[in-house]
Amino acid sequence: MKHTAILIVIFWTTVHLSCGQVQNKQSEKVIYTPIGSKMTDIERLLDKTFPFVEGYLRDNGKFFPVASAVQTNDSIALVAAYDDNENPDPEKVIADLKKSLSANKDRYKATAIFYDVTVPDPHTKVKTDAVAVFVESISEDTAFIFYYPYTLPGSKQFSFTHNTWKIATTKEIFKD
Image 1 (cartoon, rainbow, N blue to C red):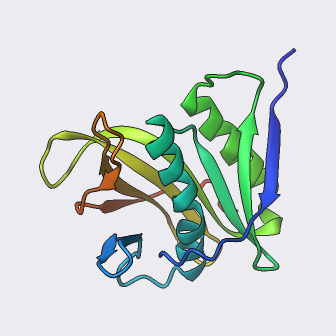
Image 2: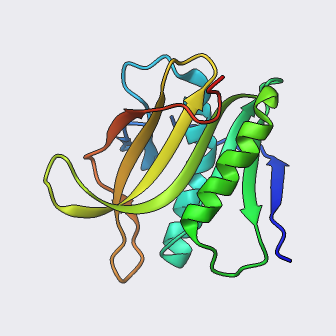
């Protein structure tokens, strides 16, 4: 019988990033700031988790869904689902992550699930690869999905494009 293990790892990083991608010319660091937002906990999750996602994309050309959460003590936990499958179905992994985060929602103030998608860019109407981030905060009335389009040519010179967008969606973790 297959068994899904949910891994929760506390991590810390000194990377300072934040969901709208501003290129900092001095350090060549991408900043992910949700412009005009009061989502401080969500910004922290984006800042701390995006470097891992970028590394996986750059090194492997893809990544499997992963989540992070701001715990009630303000530490950040990395949450991953594993079911003994080397190539898990991303939709199942996302469902498992949502189930785990929801079951433990009393431990968290905010959550983010990062996953790889190909979607039409609303700016250009052309299908593009993007990192999608489903975010929820206990202090927000709605959830959001942020989209960060990227390019990854054969040489694996990973880079985000500047046409980011977000959509409001129904809360699934903190819905009660």
